[in-house]
Amino acid sequence: MDGCEISFLGETYLTLFLGRAHLGEKYRLLSFQSVDGAMREFTRRFERVFLTIGACGVLVSLLLSAIASRSISSPLSDLIARLRESERTGKLRSDYRINSSAKEVNLLAEAFNRAAQAVCESQERLDEAYLQFIETMAQALDARDPYTAGHSTRVSVYSTSIAQAMGLPPEQVRIIDIGARLHDIGKIGIPDAVLQKPGRLTEEEMRLIRLHPQIGKRILEKVGRFRDYLPIVEFHHEDYGGGGYPLGLKGKEIPFNARIVHVADVYDAIRSDRSYRKAMPVERVVELLESGSGKQFDPNVIEVFLFLLHEWEQLGEESLALV
Image (cartoon, rainbow, N blue to C red; front, side, top):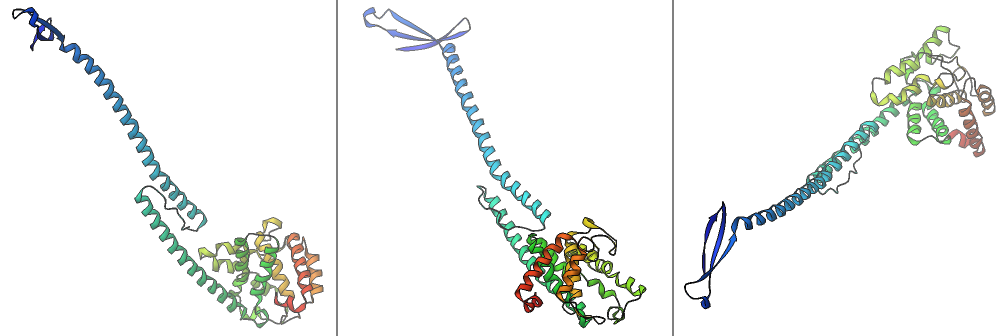
């Protein structure tokens, strides 16, 4: 059996010669098959299969690309959010998760955590030195006058006791604590002759004394880390009903932290001996505080402080002196 190709009317045919013995040697059957027709059908089927495979390949590629993109972009977005948070709060956390499917992202997270931890450790050492500096400043100020020795520390203790009793958050209590220690720092700029004068101050000397809140503000405002304490330093002599100094603020115009320190400052001043008078007894102090509520002092702060005084009095005079 053999065959050949023939063309007829522009189309190619494959012919096969089929020999049949019973027909004799002189007779053969011819079988015609259109090659072009067969190829057209094959081509159409091949194109459909190819298009299907191609479409599936594109979908798989897009899916893999989306997954890969998500595995990288999501951790990076979280990292950017973490940096923005640290910019807002001033604190850099070192607990960034390391669970990305991308090795490069995990390496970046590890480096970020190490850097954040180093910053935190440096910040802790700086804060410790900073607090020691504050203590030294307060002690140096109190040491100028034996009658005011320990005043800043006691005002800080009273102020933080009030703040805690009022349920203020720990960070605000910390600000009140340090601000109270620094509240009289401006007296560094007042001459000893005025600060330690045994008798009544003249009007000129009184005006000089009343400059110490603004002097303190000018001293501290040059250091960015002291900005949270400036309202206490500047406004701890403002009276709730008006008439205080340096600006004559009234009511809620006075920062709340300064209102707390104002009560503690006056209490310690009248409970301590001075060169020109003796300390007042607790009973008289309580009367003055009650009469000054809403006038000189914030009524809410006075209410809490009087409650604390009552508790301390129940503990005994010795415990009260140690508070």
